[in-house]
Image (cartoon, rainbow, N blue to C red; front, top):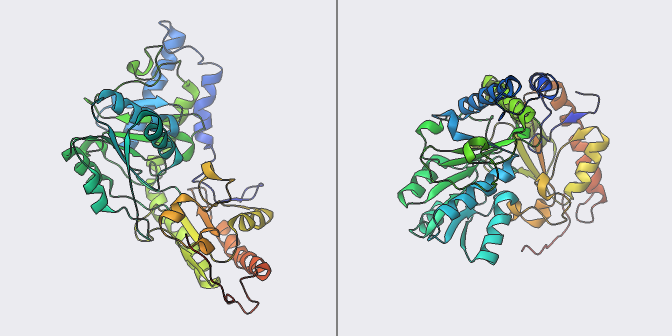
Length: 401
């Protein structure tokens, strides 16, 4: 537990690991050269960048370090992947994605549909957040340029069958891209033997700083840069490299690989302990997404008849940071598009609360959250017109839309 409290919002962002920061600091002072320069100052930084590239390659299980292109983060990687493919295959006018993607993909697809005339197939999910595979197969065809489906959902942690989806896309002649911002560092990956063509990741989701990310581009894939102006990143992403951020991402990738087992054992066990305790102590709540196939750190519980924002405020007063919906869509009074896509009733979708752990989470912190949450929910329900003091909902006929 830190002085600021208990942090369970690691799907929004993570704390920079002290070891990552230690790797970065010399890049601000002693090793400040431009990596494109021929002299020793530049060469020293260039060497560190290539070291970082190899660490990201190892974390992804990629065949070649040259398949890693450093970017400013997940949104740039997603946009670059989709726009590159559309430019490389100009005769194809269709895109396939899912209804539960991050806005970094959905907003771009909306724009391409409205402003450039592309056809966008948005594949739905079932009540557990699993992709409709029949609809996916039906959407694939010779006109599809790119499929962009996230590896794991940022709100529920539900994991999609990425390899199967990629192979189906490849058989249909489409390029397959996955937004793996939430999955990278939490589950093992071997892209060298995968049908995945492109993959986006973001540093600040795995204890690297904000403002750095990467796009995996399989060797041999047609690629068109989004940013032009320089030869950096083998002419695939112009602009002087964010050397401290890149080295930080490399260090974070190295640590993530080292802690992968811990994420999938100890962290997962803490997540399960928290979830089971809440479900046992709080009536009228349930886990959203697919509890049998999700990221090891993510727990999303929908509390009926109360507002998620009120839950977060009282949690914050207790020194606990959690989240409702995506950090990138917070501020909206509407239930998240992910909850709506799964058909979660409005009375529960409004109370959906995400607890996302990290390798820094301790059992003491989880015990504290378990002790606090039931009283917070009971307090809010005592104020709800739809909840009786006896602990059961009054007659209520909501209009679900």
